[in-house]
Amino acid sequence: MTHIVVVGAGQAGAAAVAKLRALGFDEQITLIGEEPSPPYQRPPLSKAYLLGDMEAERLWLRSSDFYADQNITLLLGTHVTAIDAAAQTVTLGSQVLVYSDLILTTGSTPRKLPSAIGGDMAGVFTVRTLADVDAMRPEFGAGRRVVIVGGGYIGLEAAAVARKMGLEVTVLEMAPRILQRVAAPETSDYVRKLHQDHGVTILESTGLDRLLGQDRVTGVRLADGRELPADFVIAGVGILPGTALAEAAGLTIENGIKTDEFGRTSDPHIWSAGDCASFPYKGGRLRLESVGNAIDQAEAVAENIMGAGKPYDAKPWFWSDQYDCKLQIAGLNTGYDSIVTRGPEGDAVSFWYFKADTLLAVDAMNDPRGYMVGKRLIESGKSPSKAALADPGTVLKDLLKA
Image (cartoon, rainbow, N blue to C red; front, side):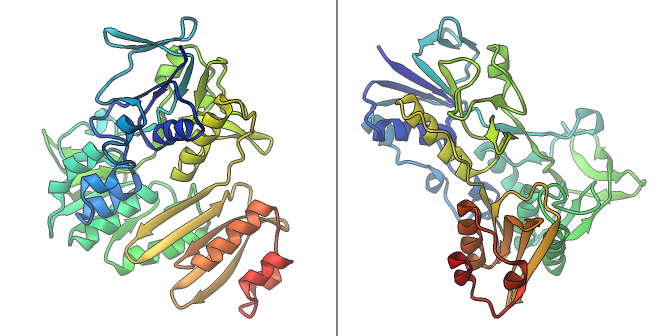
């Protein structure tokens, strides 16, 4: 009997099983998740859910009866202890499942502050799962003090929510500027000013020496010796791909679970998609941490299990909501050597990344038109004239006709 087992019940796992059924696969499917909740959206966790503007049930990707209706066995709160690639089995404690194909959508886990500097004390949180956010929500009281370690998107989104709720917020960033790993100085400058205008203290080029307190955090000591009080601390220092199971099973790991262009790992019966998977991209390898990639890559894997033989064509896009600003990103800016700024027009501005004359990416702040035009240009391989792009008289849509 054909049995497809999916390990990891996040966005990618949910997309894979739904696509398999949509494609007409009518044999056994099992979806296994470590968390007790059904597959849910993660982006609202650090925004609407943390703010209290969204109930948990609105996070669910599918209605509660979808999996039963589709004859998908959903095993929640279940830890996979081993994969035997030779025997094609997955072990869940005392239970063993035999698979014909296995899809690993094991996602990622947040980096934690080292226990050697107090990272395991009470009052220190990460932002990744529903349980993480449920644990920290009681801390968000007006007038309380939070120190956020890490000036990436997760940390900055948490900072925006905390300020909306009346907390005193300090963001520590070890690099010379926030968002340095992912964005141009122009975007960093825009986002820094946005937060400072809302009363957030941002300390760049600032290292963390240790957390202060005994059993519970009471503050932080900076690398320069300064001490800041804190009622709680949020660590937003990046994530690690979930590769432990794959590595123990003998699969090839290369900045994630290494797959070919079809999503197949080094074992012909094991596939991977989402945050945990790295795949061929423009002559190199890429691992994307985004909702769009999780869905698209998982659906491509489902199609290829069904025999499509279709290489995965990644179309990177991302977004971040902070205060009343929506930042939308299309493309990847790796290797850019110049920036073209369009705007500002009101509160809308966009920064366009070029390598020589080739458009690589666009960061659009409150500029949905710039984002959509940029995305279409990048995906079609078109690069507009820099002069035309910078000219406020240029109608953006006309660039698509060039």
